[in-house]
Amino acid sequence: MKRFCILSLYIFFVSLLYAQTVEVDGAYRWTGVNKSETGLDYVFVIPSSSQATIRFNSTSGSPVNWYRFDRTGINNKTSISNGNSLTYSPAEKDYGYVIEQGDVSVYLWLSTYKEVSSLYPDEEYTNQCEDVRLAGTGLDIAYYTVDGKWKGINRAVAYKTWKWDDALKDLKMVEDTVQGLVSKSGETVSLYAPAPYEKTLFTVIDSIPYKGWNGAIKTFSTSDEYEPRAILMKAVVSQQLRDAKNEWNTAPEDGSFGGSAPVEMEFKAYVSGDNYYAWEFMQENPSEVDDPIVDAIYPDKILRYTFKDEGTTYVRLKATNSYCSRDTSFTITVGESRLEAPNIFSPGTSPGVNDEWKVAYKSIVQFKCWIFNRWGVEIFRFSDPAQGWDGKYKGKLVPPGVYYYIIEAKGADNQNYKLKGNINILRPRN
Image (tube, rainbow, N blue to C red; front, side, top):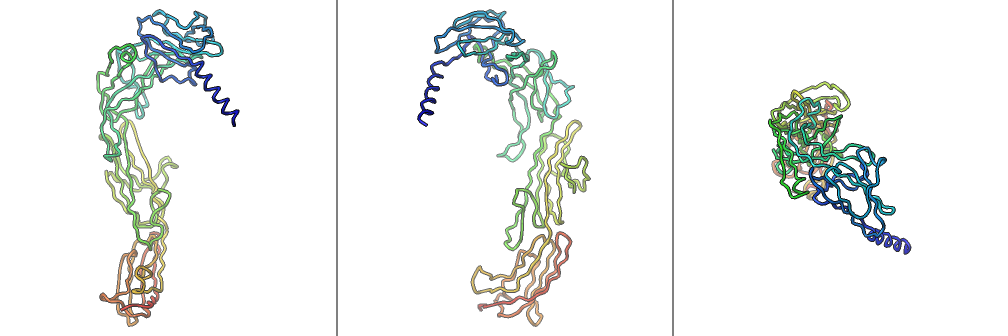
């Protein structure tokens, strides 16, 4: 353990002793470069007419050698200089450079700055339900990896759209800014931004001149507003839970919906724009069946529905327009019925302990219960299985003895119940 600590401290101080950094006068250092993907440690953007100096800062006194490579990669690098700095001319941009010192190599690329001078959405793009492809000129501030692959510096894009607001519990229109992704196909360079859900202009916000050489932040917008194709959809689903202690399985424990019927649900739909939407009820799982049979359609923003039948129902919120479609599904499972009646309780003896006669039940959708004394006089009736009898008749506790109940009920599985039995009351208190 001691040797490990000494070795760790040694490596730490050696790394400090031989630290290296690279600086370029009047340049913007782009921090989005991925070393593992590109092999590059740095990417700098330089004004087209600039001549400046690359400085290699190292705490080591070993000799420094410089190499340059073009867009074909480091296999064609050429030796150009030595020392801790290199002054390049405007013609020497859009090249890569390798700085070697002993066993250490640092790789960087210098890109020429380009200003966006035209911008428009590509209406022929076929994936406008997910993102928008912007075309134009000046989008391709390019650099190349050490193995000769083209890469583009992403540009900030601003536009109007809708987002879900957790605090408001509703959709909210916002001015959003994202890093648009630059891509190249053949000789065409495109800028990809998320598909908006509102009619909007797209604006490239270019802060490279400001951050790199104290220039002005530049902006360029599309000339016409883009008509959205994409659909923003949010479904909020909740189940009204019951706290009856004599009801089994009031709701599943895994975060899904259903349990003991009746299952009371509320479905809320939030959909952007004038897109059509509806709640669809079906018995087939839409994630497993390509074209499930829809049993019912409810084009409601807020739908309250009670499930009374045993089995599984799939509820899908689906929104569509001429271009795009969105959907999300929920599973509601209603369990089979069950009904049992006790035959003994002791009202007025120990408050809160076996002092009320209640049935135990699950998925009972119709219920009636009558209680009689031994002379056949009805002394209590109720129609909610969650309720019970407190052992009283006309406000007073009945005497101990045997009483009788009759129950007629129906389960969510269409099972009919006709129960008759005795109720024994023990140790009553007047």
